[in-house]
Image (cartoon, rainbow, N blue to C red; front, side, top):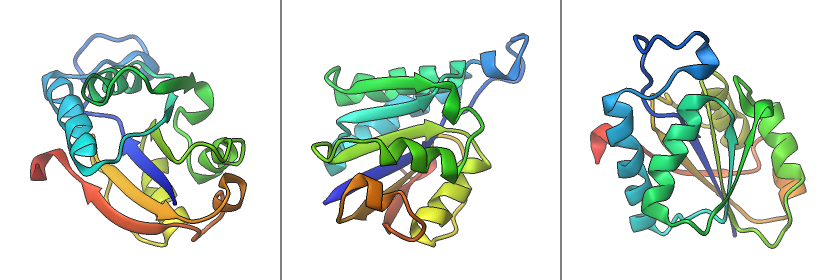
Amino acid sequence: MKRLIIMRHAKSSWSSGANTDHARPLNKRGMRDAPRMGDALRERGWVPELAISSDSQRTRETWAGVAAELGEHIVVTFTSALYHAGPREIAAELAELSDDIDTVIVLGHNPGWEDAVHYFSGVSTTMTTANCALLEADGAWDELAEADAWTFVEILRPKEL
């Protein structure tokens, strides 16, 4: 069984003074919600072996908060390919994964992340900040990088924890 966690970055600060969208950091709520989501994933047994994240400041900070609750053994890759990306870019990353890996988290931005949940599972959902969509499927990663290949399990929202 393969597991895919599609996570949107936590709440970012629009008043930080960052000179680009890419450089925007998390705000106080985002800094609080990221570890809460890591804790929720750990409690459910959804601990990824690999994280693939957009390389923006807010996704880096979100990952730091999540990883603090999951443990430091998780390999993380930050890539510009997932900055404001969508299903195609995620599929390209998944297709390259080793089948030895069972659980992966991809961390990025909307609207692409809502599109990705729908593309991979056929389920339409709203992905507000720090939401995690949990998907499961059987098969090899390259086979699972296709539309409707996954089963939607649940969505975790910080406000509902």
